[in-house]
Image 1 (cartoon, rainbow, N blue to C red):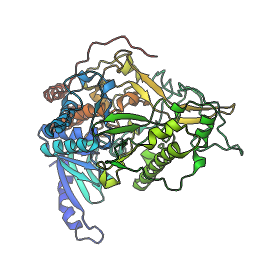
Image 2: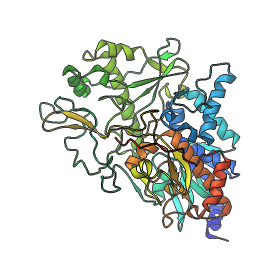
Image 3: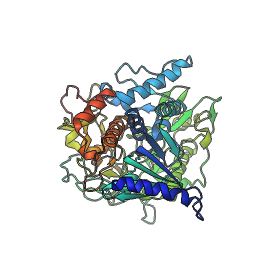
Length: 545
């Protein structure tokens, strides 16, 4: 009997005894071939893919919401900026099923998944949730919600068990499907946060970025202190990295239809002084269209409201997310609430403050939340848009050169193609005068069509170093730089990468080998059988500007 089987037997033996111990209440044990922690799009696709390979699979979600951003309001699929012919497998199936959900009810198809053009693919959150749950159910994936990681145990280099408040889980192979890399970090795998300097991976797009126009306003109050919503007066050297990550926000599901509109909640303790910096910008001649957020039309007479990468002020709380990765459950709840409060305050400012031009106020004031969406959450999405968090330092680190210079790899599990694209990371009050948003990388992509460049996602990029863990795959918080995640961070990419990791997890569990020792030829065969595209399309000249 191997040490892994011995650990499993011990856990099974002691778990029933825990039921009678004071304070233990409902300690249970659960076992599977593959356990996926985190029901993000990358996570649920990993679970479905592993199950379709014959593995028994448990999908554990720490919150009570399955699907993260796919079902949480990100209803304008970002694949319109990707090479859609490379996005097949579960990505294509999921989006095809979304369309079928509409047509089966006699409604117009919101898009045609067979046409691989740059048209916008849009859908309603409740439809996305229905499709996701059905696919998980059909694959016989056991889904558990509200089970947050408490600790893990390791047997040498293997994760032996994953412990939550209520249960202890054992598996042959684990997949970290979280945006934050929580399981990866708990397993002692190397990771990083923030931005690299330009020299670390020879990335011209790394370090500080200043593509936005400086605002000719004072970022300090009368006492010389930073105004609210300004994060610093010292960004550091341009070529150096730091611990900042791109802003988080919510994707707002909105409507102007009076029959389905719910009034936007009023913020708690609204303080007009919080928006003095925006007021100064508008009064100083700043363009009105530089304040607000993007609205993407979608079925059901609704809109997907998104933080605007190009505006000076939008619904992203710049600087508010930097501690998210290390916060505990209570800390993340507080950060979530802070982002919701800011969103409601910003909307209130837009629609009521006299400094905001009337045409801008009217544009947003007609909108409210949707009565038929997120009913269990007072119609406000429970999913905070975590664009970036921890990133593993694994067997291979995807950097700028892999996207723009050397896209072909010998061990691809998926193809990604979203532009390199980062939202703001800081808002700086300049000591010489002025305020500037820093960290934006405007989309690095083709001009016609406006899509990113296709590149391989190597199997090595989802693998920890073997001396750290041999039964874990990390398809979401995968091994890449900040510039790398600026392209990889899209749900469509995470879906196909997650599928690749799920197939690998099932095969490694079946073969009884370390994930690093799985023969790539076997993995490639099953990836192709599941409809994954692994051959790069013809490459065009790279526009690096």
